[in-house]
Image (cartoon, rainbow, N blue to C red):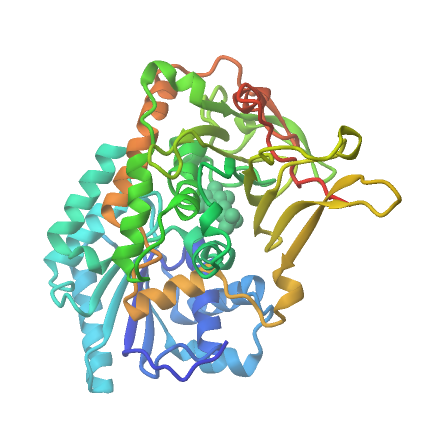
Length: 504
Ligand code: BG6
């Protein structure tokens, strides 16, 4: 991917520049944008952190990060050397007004040198409890005064619940216009996730059957083998519902269930998505157990290695009631989807790392074939593979070769890797470029975030008021708790096998 398109001069100010996100994701993404010639001629990154390190230490660490995490592998020395000149570092505290005066001075210095005003992007790569304070300081320092040039980027989690999300939105809106705020959900930057829009709206053949008449149910699964790693502190305040479902899985649901947008203008797409969230049937507090299942991993085996249970992970309470697995059944109350269940599930320490969306079609309305032909018959199924494999698989029935009519399911497949040889950009590359270009289509608008919280609040409230009595209830390396099977089995469905079993 290369382009001649030139962006406005841009300065990205990363607050939390010595943290994991900057090292693993942001700088490798910016580096790849640089190699693909997306970075404007006048460009700078200003890293801010309280760590007492030199700019050379900072660059050295980022170089290691690029070598380790860039999709292109180890950086070529000549390329890195010409890139690192963009990197600057300031040791500074976020809660001190002087920090923001220093940032302003540095920005002015660049602008004077470049003889042009630059976009200033404030990237908050910091824990959520610092969002308020940093935003307020950016506001009071006057750094956000220019509404066209200043933007703020907020990582998830956006709020802890509906009330705190509203509070954060209100606070941000006292300083920034909605169009200046970029709420990141990195799933929306993933290539395969964006491809859902192309698949649905750039092809004429799927849209006519994309509704309750032809679709029986939808499953969205995001399974991870990873545990909580070194994020016990954060996870104890989050859990699977807040960490994954409130954002990533509900956004996937929106892309599957949204109405066709009239255009790909940011607000048009986001309006269609928020319509889906607003149409989600409210779960009544007394019915949470019918719609939601939680789990927590115990000890077990992952890829041949023994792993500890969640309660033995660092920084986790030894009798924690936090869920590391959540499954949800949702209905979208509109004409298109009335009566079609959407099953969402996600969990850590499962048997596979795999994100897939399964669209299960209804059976044919009348079975003309004799029963001896249809022993292996299965309704059509479309599987969208999000990661780690990227592709689409359509299951249909075919005649098995032989003298008798014998039907058997077969698959048509599209695999990204077989079709495209050029590298696939990482989600953060797409998202950072969009922020630089001022395109907010792939970012969460204030009302989307709040609508997503509204769906989950009854479940969150119920689970917090009634700590689970049977945790841990699934072994690491397995498919999750038995209750999750029951949630869907009572509707006559079953979860797609992970990974879905291969057809002939
Ligand atoms: C993050 C969650 O948002 O997404 C993590 O906080 C999770 O807990 C991660 O592991 C999954 O992202 P990906 O891109 O690896 O699927």
